[in-house]
Amino acid sequence: MKKMFLLIMGCLLLTNCSKEHIIHYNPYIPEMNVNLVLNLNLPLYNALNYPNNAILEPSQGYNGVIVYNTGMGYVAYEATCSNHAIDLNSYLTIDGQLAFCNSCNREYFLLNGQPGANEEDSPYFLKAYYVSQQGNILTITN
Image (cartoon, rainbow, N blue to C red):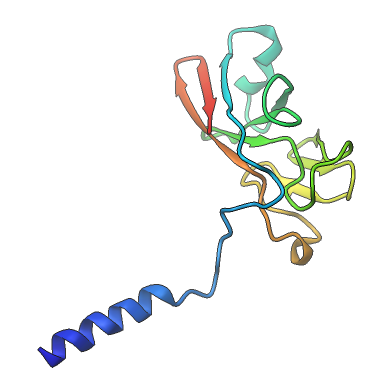
């Protein structure tokens, strides 16, 4: 019985100790319903048929939704900077494989949403949305 107790306690300690802590809750971007359907056959979304291309769909989210073709699938993010309060200039602009905040000049990698150069003062990744694909139709939700 004593050995079983020590084994369980050891397992609990090992599973609770982690060097990296990924923050999922973001105090700057409140939850918002996103339900976006993109038809990749339409000329507006044609760029997404090719790897390393991104589009900004302004119709949903706070400042729109960025959709990026990674070459192995698609990812989607809120087009709002994740590391400060939402303001008039907290929208992101796309430049190749990066997104830039127009308010604080932070950069984010579109491949994984990770903050770029100023990572130590940027604890939050871009807010990601779920992407599912059925043929040439992408559905983006949260």
